[in-house]
Figure 1 (cartoon, rainbow, N blue to C red):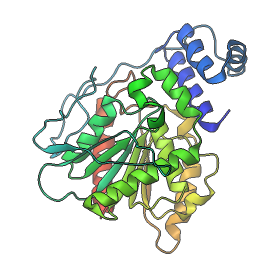
Figure 2: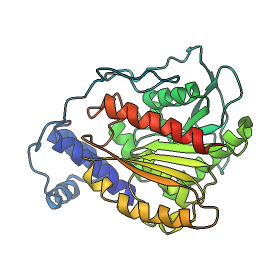
Figure 3: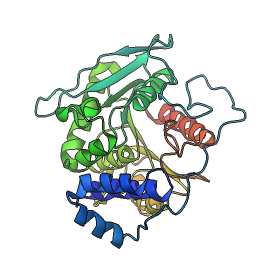
Length: 324
């Protein structure tokens, strides 16, 4: 198994343990990765995954009150369609920003910029392991309300993306099998497209879950960005080159996301080494209390409006400070 296959499998097990999916659905999702029911049963037995969920997901927390921000923030309650900033919002302009892979393939993308004024920079948004869904497009539009050009590309564009692979478990299984260097290459191409859109070298990158892991991998791969904000991203197998990054990194973790949050110490040590080198940039590790993996996704069962807003406001502030 690849590192990302293990990660996706672990997400499915976590969903089962939290009571989000049934055991039958767990078996289906894991078998899409392993290729056989026998292998699935063996792996789940090794992982100690029982026949019934060990708990139930915490109820989403809505904000009782909120300090108004001059840009769009996560909603006060969960959504079903993922739309909080409409495409025709007067603050933004949705645009087509062509992105091509190094092999010449057209990458499926979504972009938005401020409706007026020069963008402060460009922010690449890396999707979760479900593809370029409406929630991620909404995050791109939120980026635009904050004064940046936002862009996201579907990392399975060559297979038709999330539009064709509408079974989210099948999408995740296919994504987990794609070589990490190939995905890093696509993200670097997307960053180049952002630069060519008129923002120059003022670019940053953020991503969620699998996308947070790809932010880490892109930094390890030597991407030239001013700032990066990975949300609860799994640690790459080899983080040696992270100590050479020149990005200002704000790493977001969730207290209850124990497996991934446990790696924050290693990531922090690498970032400390990077910051100490000539030209090194500041970094910050933030663990948000009382929440689990994917707490920022307002379409998911673990959404927490209070901490999602806090994390997003901090993200925008970080980008405004270092993408310049």
